[in-house]
Each structure stands twice: as structure tokens, then as C-alpha cells.
Length: 177
Image 1 (cartoon, rainbow, N blue to C red):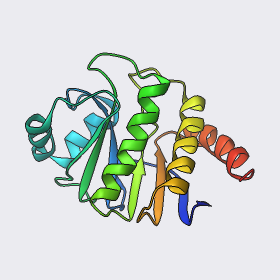
Image 2: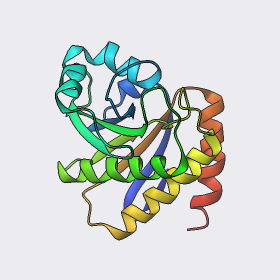
Image 3: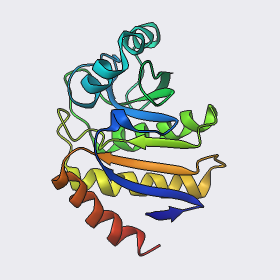
Image 4: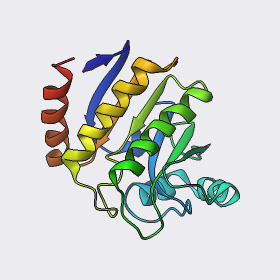
């Protein structure tokens, strides 16, 4: 556990759909079509209300983020972070914008806690270690430059390997702050 700008940053190994935060972030495409990976798990566990709302809202711009209901999830909201086009790949710029905009959207709806997956590292093909570095950079920049209500930000990683990669990078980076 670490702190940036008074906000607690936690790494958790587990299933993001079980997160007890106010919102979870979905690694989304610009069409807001819930397919495989994190999006598929959210669709399965959260129920059809999430995809229905995505259809009403979408499509969105690359790098943007929008909130929908959490459906049957514990989290009240899902924030869809569009780091890729449907069938495309995540790049560094779209990842940075989608993380920043997820934090912005959550702040606008007064969320105190939010959980992120390793956005873009599944089907979108972004390198895991670079994702960890970018997430920390964006968290640091956002939490130190914007007025926010965040008390807690979690990064939830499904596999032990992914968790250990993030833990190593977070430890190195956050111990320098």
C-alpha cells in the first residue's frame, strides 16, 4: 500500500468483478462492445444492463471514458476506458488518456474508490510492465494536479505473474516519491 496526494494506492491479486470499490474500470473499445477479458467478465457477472447502457452511449472517442451502471456487480458503476478501437491495439497515448479520463469521470460523479485492471494488456496487446509505469505516472500526475475526492485506488490483477510485475514496478516507482 502506498499514498499519492493523500490517496491510498493498493495492488490486489484477484477478480476485479468482486471489487468492493464505488466503481471498476473496464478496459474498453471505442464501440463500447463488451467482448472478452475484463469486459467479458463484467458482462457475465454484471448482467445485460451494462451492455444496454453502453449501446445507448457509444461509440466514444479513443482515450475517452464514460460511466454506466454496475448492474449486478458489487460496484455501483463501471467506467469504460476506451484505450483501443474495436479489434485494435492499445498505444501509449490512448492508455494515458483513458486512465486520466477514467479518474476524471469518477471524480465528476464523486467516487471515493475505484479499481483498475491492467488496461490494454490483454487482447489489445500492450506490454504489462509499460502499463504499470504509465498507470503510476497518470495516477501521480492526476492526484497531484487535480482536486479530487479519491480516498482509494486499487489495481486488481488476475494472475500472480501480473501482480508480481506490477508490485515490482510500483515498489520501485513509489519509493522514489
